[in-house]
Image (cartoon, rainbow, N blue to C red; front, side, top):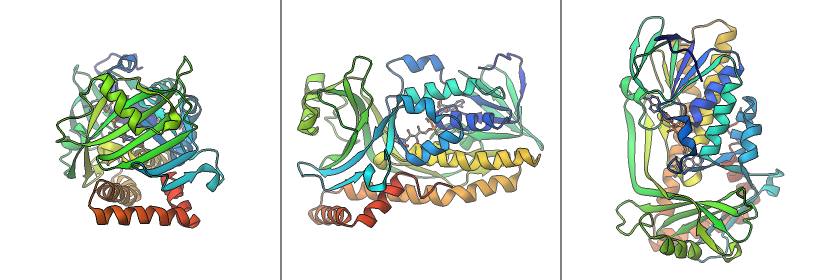
Length: 405
Ligand SMILES: Cc1cc2nc3c(=O)[nH]c(=O)nc-3n(C[C@H](O)[C@H](O)[C@H](O)COP(=O)(O)OP(=O)(O)OC[C@H]3O[C@@H](n4cnc5c(N)ncnc54)[C@H](O)[C@@H]3O)c2cc1C
């Protein structure tokens, strides 16, 4: 945490937003000795509150490598649960398709971590890099662009002068709006209800994607709690217009619905955390850069969570931008150099566009209940199951291996 309470702060790079992507970028730059300041409007103490963001995040193999490079992975891995098997099922059907870690000779296909544990690990990591400063809670309310730097104004009146501002301030990015960057948007007319659940028997590190008539229902394995209770988290996709949403059900009704949706092998299942709901939309910024500004992660692109790839994409942005900025430090180049920022956008736009399109397509395919689409989809899944090379291709995509530099 930055102790400096003076009204003007000088830093080389300001990161607007200290969510998972902002903190990860700050750590990468801090590790390289770049003077970086990350400003976040959330109070770090709120992480302990029950009302804090209830998402759990599937972290791909590729993301774990990126975090290793930033010396972040060890602490995150301690809180994460490895995924050894992914099963794809359709209501009441036997497994249509499964992906096993052993198929690609790896220990785990990915990991699942609670967002609050991830944030805590990242906050702790930032403290270990002397050139990395974290100011929170503090909201950025304005920018002023000068020729050789940019001045950011905080709500409490402090100002921060830097060569570059990186907008890591999420889907509603103030930075993106201030720069006047338009976005392409799509409303999926769905919401995701998420919650942590306890179950009688171990999950055996299995993640399940159940394509039900009402919409996709995902079960993600979590580490046992301090009392040894077995836990998983759920992502229950529902139409946003649905009147009788599981979000409002009393606990008894909700638990009965969980029991019905979990395989019998989990034994008794019950809600263990608060239920949260997230509206599902697609958003893609038409540009990732503006003079002395770059957008990363959800500030640049927000996708459907059906494949659990949003943050994984964001971490690939961060990896690309951090490499360019570290090279700029070595060449003593301006961090706000327009050509370098455009190079960052060039490196990242295609991967982000393909993933945005693929998750949109998957959601369309698996939220469609017409008989012909259902038959085609079931046949397609069965076909992939029978073709080991194709299966391995999909596994490498999901693990973020093919996108890794
Ligand atoms: C239901 C659901 C499930 C998901 N599951 C997965 C998954 O399994 N795997 C995966 O990879 N992704 C998943 N995602 C996507 C993932 O949650 C996001 O991609 C990720 O949280 C984006 O991180 P971020 O740091 O870019 O943005 P955010 O997490 O939104 O953080 C932005 C930060 O900026 C701060 N901020 C905003 N404005 C200002 C300002 N003016 N001044 C200062 N600070 C500001 C905010 O307070 C916040 O802390 C899921 C998403 C949803 C909705």
